[in-house]
Length: 174
Image 1: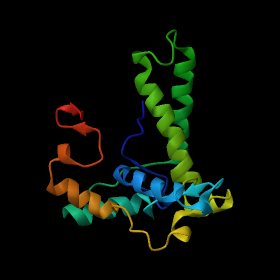
Image 2: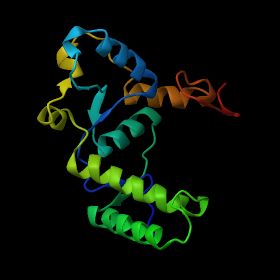
Image 3: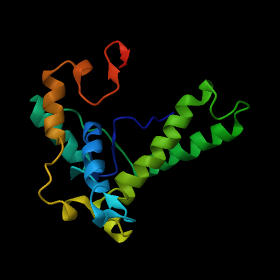
Image 4: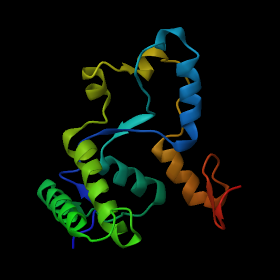
């Protein structure tokens, strides 16, 4: 069975919007406090990068060169098809723990097709759908943590202290 994990999808050049989990609240507070956003959909993101750019960012931050392992669109679609067939044939409910890997691969496959192949999570596509770009509304708003800053933080700190994240080395933060 092929698993969709850390591999780069397609040629790895499709960009998509990224936002640090710890920054979402700041963006939402800015959006909901501005009357220009009333009854509007706003696309909020810190930066748009491709998977290749993410790998290059990781390499620069760490001083190492992570391997770039690719998975084709056809392989992702095959994973989606096979996992759906197994889930449909399973005598147990889809949510049963025995189906966890198939559920994860099915959902991740759909997600990867959406943002790594079709480009559904880009400022351009959001504009096409009628969303307002956060940065057009708030060009002077302080940007959230970039992927470079995130990698530098991860490489230099104990992740259990990562602000805004619910998990610690011992489990869920209370």
